[in-house]
Image (cartoon, rainbow, N blue to C red; front, side, top):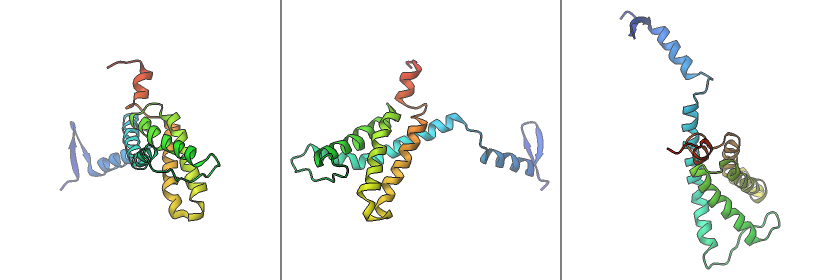
Amino acid sequence: MTGLIKTSKKFVSFRETKNTSMKKTYSTILDLQKVDLGLLIFRIGISCLMLTHGIPKLIRFFGNEEIVFADPIGLGETTSFALTVFAEFLCSVLILIGLGTRLAAIPLMITMAVAALIVHMPDGFGRQELPLLYLTGYILLFFTGSGKYSLDQYFLSGKKK
């Protein structure tokens, strides 16, 4: 084996090919198309996961059962529950479709901060971990927005495809 690899119209050594592929792997130059695809996947993932919490709460909210829910900031059980349903269901759907993503992330950040830092504070880190993870994701979406593959982009670009 000579250690030469034929690429388009020239021979290069295996070492040069390896170095080129390593540079691409560890490059800090962002490919915006890949970033937008990553944001789409992230939005779909975090929204679907949060909807597993929001949908049962929405059903319970409109059900016949008495609402028993924490009142961590003194707004009343029903109001606290309604705000949580709003965040976990409606705001999650908005993030899923990429509509008003930055604004929709705010109620979710507040809800997750309250859950982690007030409601589950006495329970220890094991119960705080999930809301803190969600909080981190919503902070990311607050700063990045929804990306190219979203209704935000569709309406802001003015292009009707």
